[in-house]
Image (cartoon, rainbow, N blue to C red; front, top):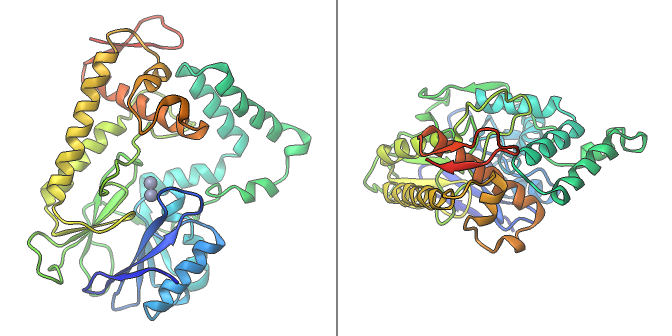
Length: 355
Ligand SMILES: [Zn+2]
Ligand SMILES: [Zn+2]
């Protein structure tokens, strides 16, 4: 049975499962409008997830074919995965921030072998050991080889051919929703085009504060969203500072003071400002801890090995190590931007030291 919650005031959520993922599910929100229901995010592209979404919509008295529009908080496959299917069923528009539309466009245009090559180069530059990089090189070469060509395996990999949105979400503007006031707030950091959506209407239970906030992955209870470097094979230089973006976006959301936060994972919660404070404190103490580690020059990989994670480095699986090193790099980028660390001249792979 689909898990559906009624949040009042024409807002419901459906738990759409993410197969084999400890997060469990994405909360897909159904927002009633005068032109039909609008979804906020769609969930992971898997038959079981689609069934859960369809059942949930039925429990809400509607169906995928009745969806008027789809608003996507960010391009990740647990949020945008089913957008193509919803659009196919209903003809709904799909809206996303321009920066994440660029990521979608790039993902659609980039073959897996280019991604493997990009990831391998990036890991080498971060100081990853050869045994970690080798499987990526092998995967790239398999894709290049005569046996690995063709599109079959590509189709089976989720998230490689995401739906191209047909509307842009413009930061600061109200979305074009009949009978509702939903304002887009650009909150880059977790992805370059992440948006939160502020429902500027009185809270249905009259909780104090300003409306309700669909927070995507930006502001979650209990868990800290991943903030790594924006992955872009065309990234020319060290320009982006995703952690800096994230911390700025967090402060803005804290100042908004919504009465209730409706996140894309776990559960709804109140008192956004104190959750924002916890996250800002967490990152501040993390940055301070890293500066201590950087008393000795370290590569991004060595820093990741020494940082505190939810389990010892030896027990972190392969894919999660890639995410961890990307997170270490985002922290290094922030420290460099703040003038608190710098790259050691002539080091290769590059090492960083506290200033
Ligand atoms: Zn995400
Ligand atoms: Zn997510």
